[in-house]
Amino acid sequence: MMRNGFLSIVAAAAILCSGGSAVAALLYDMEGAPPLDGFGPNGGGVTISADTIGATRGPTSLQADVVTGATFVGALTGVVPFDLGDPPGVEGILLDLTIDAGQEFTGGFAVIGVTVFGASQPDYPGGQQFGLQAQFADFEHIGGKVAGTYTVQIDFDSATHPLTFVGGQSFNDIFGTVGSGPDDLIPTGFQLFLNKSNDQALTVYVDNIRTIPEPATGLLLGLGAIAMGLIARRKR
Image (cartoon, rainbow, N blue to C red; front, side, top):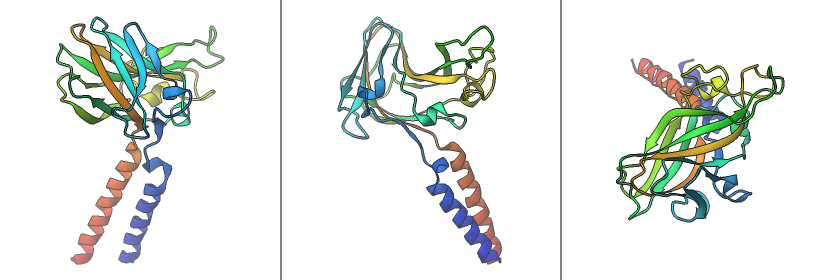
């Protein structure tokens, strides 16, 4: 019976590994149509273009150039993939961030983070509202990084709800689908924001934006602990 229990745990882990919940969903690989998955500049002083530097999935990456005087700008797309537009379940994202040699940021500060745009429900009192945005508190420092490619994690665990103004809300607290709740926003856009001091220009390359497979990872760790316990018990 002990052997059968252990095999059941192994089988469950295998199912999780092969299922969608255990695999990071690719949101943007910068290869899709329209070009760059629809990413374009949001704010004065930023240029968004295609490049090959830092391309980690396919031949194309997104290059963001921010002029010296600009401080808060973004790369914004209205393309909303299913895995972002049909929440809940989005814990945050992973992205590949590249800094090319000779383009290291040595100014006061520079960070990259995420803002998700949305619309209120169609029957929202007073009429449907558009252009609502949830800017998540987590971000990654760019300043001080040496040239290279980094895997960056940005958690969607803390933002202010743009309708209720309640702080500390997760993506899954704020966003939903049509009819999921009166205060649930329907995702309409995704933005990488770049916030920096005005003393230096900034150039970064972004590719392979995908979701974090957080829930499945936790389940697998739990299954592994149970399996190890059964093995130790059997040896005794």
